[in-house]
Image (cartoon, rainbow, N blue to C red; front, side, top):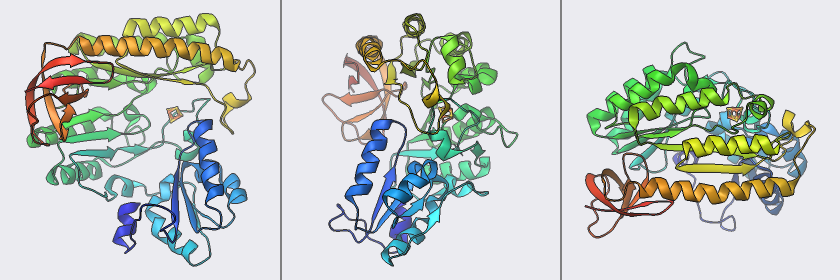
Length: 403
Ligand code: SF4
């Protein structure tokens, strides 16, 4: 949006006091974020405002009530930001929300700064209907961008100097289901292209349900191209209990998630496993929580995103009975927090004394082949370089390396 506004002649300033209009880019993933967004909308009252992102898409009536003067721009219409800003500057308002045919513009959207690390979205929305999810309300059903557009975008980023391409989606393994192609085909082409430029590829998160049918092929691809693909697998499992997964409307079992994990373990040996869990989903018993702990003990994630379940308006889980009391959620999330740090530290410390290859992404830091943040001690190679290093120390969040 910044790039589009600049291209249209607007200047981006540092605070709303200096601004003629403000664009509030919103998120709705948790209730605490939701509350912050509402506060900002109210604080900006009397000031020309565009409310963009997921909030106006999922909850348009709430925005209209809070700020009847604001323009609304949903995630599938961010390319119309200039019109929305012009409208509020003229004292009127517009709404660009709802579904839309052509979304390929997203694969080609301009960027503010050419960077060493480029984020490339490969689709919008997802094919799933998880019972707790508000993001789905805003992002809609799966809409994959065409492989040609994605490859063109990747090539453009590489030409501009990117040394790391990060492919993102709500669920990367679902890519192409709506087009009759699949992630494997796309990934092979992207990886091959990036290898010609000596760049790394980071695959964004995928759900076990979508990954299960292609797990072996995917793991093979990671092993074949391990000099290009980061050995990093982000698979949000959300719970280690089949009954909770069923109530969440996640379309896989714990055993299937474990099979995917093992497919990568067999081929890659050491790899960075990242997962997300929700504690205190309605109906989560002590036993169900223990099952989640057991799954995590088995996989010992290098990064664990653990969040407490919160009721999001217009989602089935918000209406479910058997809501778990807040103090129980808090106790369970504390257990996970302690474990999370232990697993992360242990996984990183395993690399101490080993040699890794770091892609330098900024002054004094980069990512090793497992996409772990690595900071340099002593000599600092130039950003953009790829260097062999030794790991001399590690904590739960990073490696310390020397050349
Ligand atoms: S996969 Fe589930 S949690 Fe993720 S965006 Fe889709 S519906 Fe939401």
